[in-house]
Length: 441
View 1 (cartoon, helix red, strand yellow):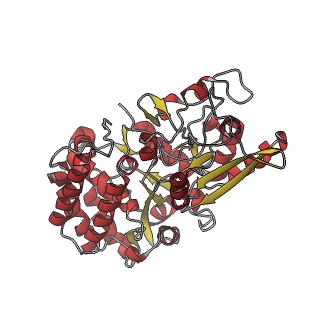
View 2 (cartoon, one colour):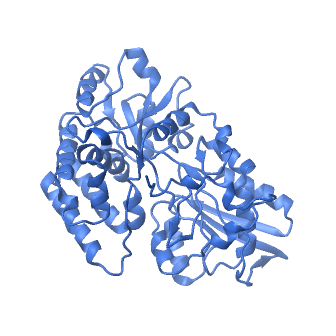
View 3 (tube, helix red, strand yellow):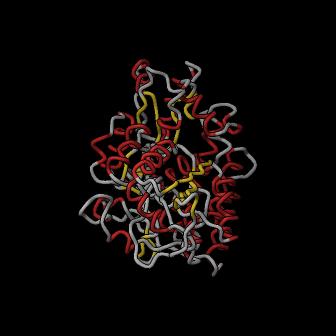
């Protein structure tokens, strides 16, 4: 089985032949400029590593800019040519687009060089089956985080205290809803303002359960009629049914993702969908007695029996690190990121943020029981990446996730919704300026 990639955040590049000789300096020091996405994975461990690196390398200064809207700062940088030395774009930046236009450095030679203070090749320090941010046989970015993406999270204590069983089928959700309502608890707390959470956490997984993995592959490969096929229609109709029958917490559609997640941790809802960044992102609001655990999506009774166990993972494109071809301090930036990707430094991320890494040996540092429960899902099942469509066709993904939000708000019928998605897919397919990728999960 091929994994389209594996999710998301920090790391990159090694010593490279043929790098630019141009450099910037500040007070005799080489200054490495870093721009990174500030999300659930955090930036604290990166900043700590930068401070430690500067103590070891007095001739280097590292300047880090972290923001949840870093894509808005990156876009004008690339337009002007005044690019950072390293960047971690997050999910909203079209990194595949700038790779296709030749603005990102290939890392193949760097990965063949020595790792930081090691005799082994840098490439050999990563788990290869979780290291596939490639295009045309070139490594352009290197992910450090492996993330089961958009699984369902729940409180084991809440279920144990009430004697509730986890749902095995989608029909079980309605039975569970009836019991939870007696406690004034809803089934889902949706991150209403951020439609991607429930598009990738409810809709596409439901399509996969109804139509099998071929339904997802056909749509992602822009096959004619795929986005308007029966599994997509049934999943849209089921989504509307969940809204009408009260499985969604009232007011969810007006909530930010952190507001919705806060209500989940206040036990106002049974499930929240997110990746393994959830625990680290919300650590300040999680009650001490909350037993955060993850489950895979329920099965669809009439779906393909042998394809009901697929588990979602996040892709690595938005969470990886890249070097622009016009970066001024490529050599210095590469050396810092070799340090950042070393086992000792990544262990800090694993411990402090409750994340899993693609760096070999870092699984030993995993202490979070919630993370272990999520990883167990991907270890037992085949995987696919619902968010891959966002990496390849970000404008298309934005349009259809917003349309799904309109569907749940009652502003669009299921039939109109799938017709809209099919129309947008055809536009992408006919646009020769957009690079097309082949998906095979």
